[in-house]
Length: 115
Length: 112
Image (cartoon, rainbow over all chains, first blue to last red; front, side, top):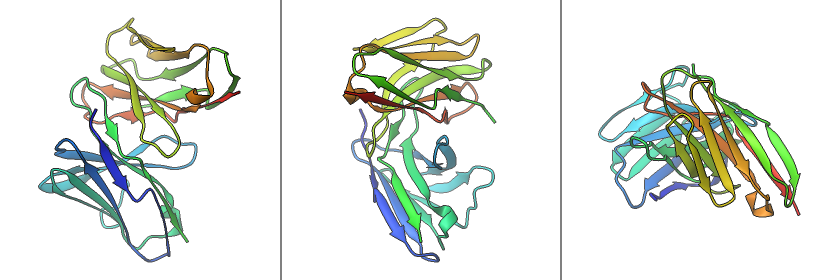
């Protein structure tokens, strides 16, 4: 199956700083990548969809200026949490979407803690 | 907003026990139902992609059934082993959406 590599796996940052999370497709080209956030005991919630060569599309309620998404190449999508606050502490995970009836492929996820 | 629910939220069983979990999803506009196994610090891995009403799939000791008319799927694990300990996620794909809608998962712990 396809491999999606996500880094870092965990990060602790101070309030007000920015954090970049990278998601790479290692053995395939991804024109689209989904970014999810998960709070404790809750579902993976779609935040945004990154599209190679064009603007990301954000789900309702997700701040575009806070969660900057860039999909600069067919193998790299990044999520930058800008001016992080403690309420941004969460688990973030990327996924290459399913094609037709195939499964989705996920990164390992990033645990962000803002102190 | 699509509603996908899983139960139970968590489950502890003894090694050798068989167990099952439930995923309920909208019964309209169905396209596919995914099951994933998610171990701590690893990526979720696909177990099954199910598409047909009445479908039953099996992979080793794990099997799943699908009822699209009533909107539920069961995942069964026969003779649970400690290595089966993980969170099991189901995800619904509707005919009109490109992205999966996930349940909150069932966290299984198999005690030796």
